[in-house]
Length: 384
Image 1 (cartoon, rainbow, N blue to C red):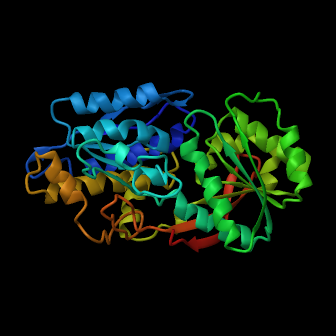
Image 2 (cartoon, one colour; image 1 turned 180 degrees about the vertical axis):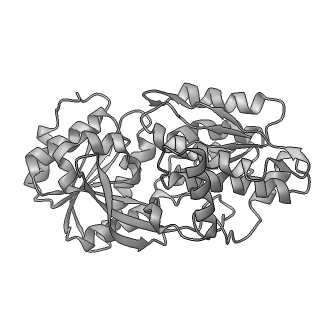
Image 3 (cartoon, rainbow, N blue to C red; image 1 turned 180 degrees about the horizontal axis):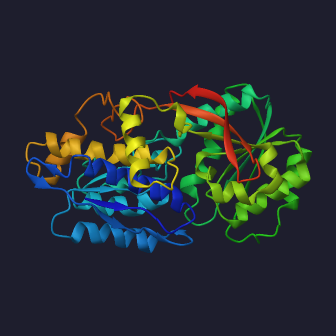
């Protein structure tokens, strides 16, 4: 088994817990499945700056060229998955992501680049990819509901055109389109390139446009980087009380720590629930084992996603007609039905690789002086 996570990058604590969850699921007590010893080989899909195309492609290539790969857990970022998936699919290797919400990885939609999702599946169209998190289309629906609930009526949408940002920025377009049908007026839109904007500013003209449009809410579709952090600070400095909405891709401690007082007007929509909201015997088992193994660390919800990713793959190996045949393992993964006792809650995976999970939380941001925290304000079910 291979897992590709950027455990040295900006989100290393998230990746650490996903990896630890995978280790717990494998060691407890499943390292032997149908007489076969299952081992976990960690791979890096990035460097300290974040995931990178070359490293993500190299990780997937390393996995497929090894002697006995049976599954690949990763990647986390949608763009990284878009890089690795054609490689793993070309070798009929099951790939399961804990996140990667970009809808074009699994479904044809008006938001896809031409040829998606077929371009990710060169192996005759065989579906080998599944994700545990809902799509960004579902997140957009929940985000609009959150906006309406806290009083947004005039929306401005911003998309990032930096390289590879399209996988994360498309949600702003989705939110803008959904808003029109939900009683929220779209009063303007703009594009930025966070890769070319200095971290110390450059967004003053954009802030003036938002103010002139009399927007009371702004949605930003982007991945976290220095340019987007600067955008957040400048918009808060220029616009004051205008609400700034961040998709789940920006719900990272490094990003939230860098935006300063803009946290006061920042709102996040995410399918990742507060840890205490995950219930059941399985969750208690995982968290107890986590605290026993890593006594000085506090678990995050992501440990449950790593655990479930590994557990679901092990179940596919257990159910496969021939556990040594990759396509048999793929078929078994997509036909288990309802996963009733999952650590992340009951769900099933459909034939496209999408999860039935559709619960989102609307968060505010609060910093008690020891780093930013997400405070749940609303709870939504999104049909997508």
